[in-house]
Image (cartoon, rainbow, N blue to C red; front, side, top):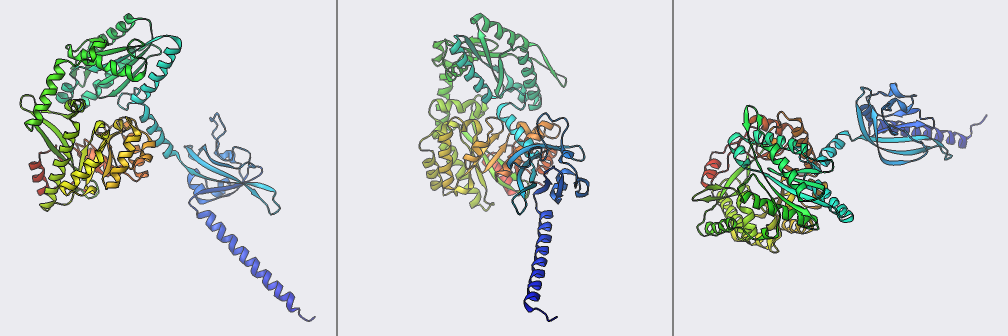
Length: 579
């Protein structure tokens, strides 16, 4: 039979097409097996028909172990809601749904999955395809951060954010039901002395012990919170009269007078309490808080270890306050304010890359006075702006002196208070100082605390943006000790997160501190931010932070805060931490 050229040509073409399809199928199978996403397919009976390499890695099962098996192999018997893979109708696509599975080794993992329908060439549903990723570590980090947003890490009590939310609700409820509530500010007397003499570790134990006793004083609907330092605040609901308030304050004072014993140290403490009552002393949360704080100030001025109920006359300034204000003015005139510098060290290179400028008041009678004692007064009397500008100008000039002397270019970090960030001309002032001192903006790092940010988020965001336009770096100081929120990290152009020393102190033997610090570092790196751990004192702390991929440290392991002269001497020695 004579050959048919056309038929022969068609057969050749068909073989080429079949070969091309076979090669394409093999390539797709290879890609399917190697893609970084976990993928598998099922038929309409939820029987597994394919399972790629990443799916094997996440579930712990091999392809041979699951092929032809039902998806229930991953199900959790203890789960009270639908969970696992393909624990739903395969004919319904879903996007980014979270589920829980149990791996082959019985470990539970949290996944985020996407599902789509599989159809044949005629459009009939023949099964489903699911891709998923393991988000267990991310969920754990989110849980830690969510906890930090509303609770004090040291004591486990609600923090300022959660307390304020509960107070707002309580005020609204009291208004509708014509009830009374009380707000009580508590401040431990002479806590700083205990911290200074016995150390922060004992101080922390005391704060935890105080928190436990305060919880024991609560009635069913009351709330006790820690604001920071040695300050606590109590919300007492359903108050009938002032006598109820007095009973609560007396109970608190009595239980706190009982001795504490930590590591062989017997401690005795007292507390001063300031009280405001709704609706007599304020009809909104802010007024109640402000007036309770005013009453606390009067209680401490009366000799401590007592309580004071707010009265309108307390708003007048006390003579003690006036004396301190006058001393502030004298300190300015006689140049009693000085700046100390504490080095910051890069954990990769071991080199000093920056100095934090720390303001101190060298009082001729009282000795060294720290910012927590005089910054509020500077803010109240309107002197924070000129003093803040002097600090910035002095620190920039000193850093310029170091650069001109041939030392490596360093950053200078400056702390700014909430009131400074409320200045209308803040950015103009910073720009002017940078020009006057001929200092590079990229070498300036401005630090602000989380609690300062939330005082006026919109204004702070505007200041951050304008400072960023100058080229200045921004750091969040004492991160996770106040209003920790992912929202402001997204909103604000931040460069660095500073990890508070309270999380570093016991990091080598406290699993909670480890979890918090690891979460902060992971969060920072996800946002492409650097982390600086404060208060690092030991080699063990340093190495532990290095293992967690912390970027930098400052603390006594490098140096105490130094005068400009002593800092210059330290720089000349070119000391490095072993990398």
